[in-house]
Image 1 (spheres, rainbow, N blue to C red):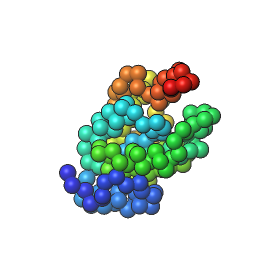
Image 2 (cartoon, helix red, strand yellow):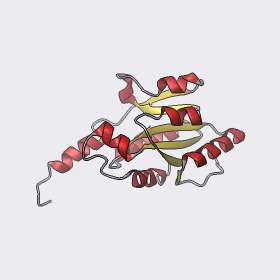
Image 3 (tube, helix red, strand yellow):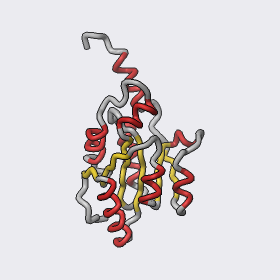
Amino acid sequence: MQHSITTHRVLSLKDALVWRAELRVQGVPLVFTNGHFDLLHIGHLDYLEQASALGGALLVGINDDDATQALKGDGRPIVPAAERARLIAALYCVTAAVIFTGETANDLISALQPEIYAKGGDYHHKPLPERAAVEAYGGRVVLIDLLPNRSTSALIARIRALPADS
């Protein structure tokens, strides 16, 4: 499906809202997901490929550095938000990325009202903070199963376990 937006772009909130209006006019459904995406790995790619396959354009919200530190702890993020957004936006399966503030994507979701909100399958067993915001306008939440044993935390643990001279 062709879109009027050039792929591999990091959008401001203002530009994301303009683009969203264009998608509506074109009848292109918006799939939205969000996360930290600190230390990009194969689990991220697999997840984003599955989100993209849900249809339409895929917009990825990237937690800003303050939210990532608050949610993930001291020393995080390892990679600054602007760099994380560029990396995510450069993936073939991602149409665009946007950096957002706050610990949830509720404000962004309410503003963009994506037809589909995708999130990791780990939310099968815990509350999804954005669910109410999505359901408030009639959007659909899709939980995507994650690759087992593929996480940034696991990657950090493996790096820490390397011998000092590696």
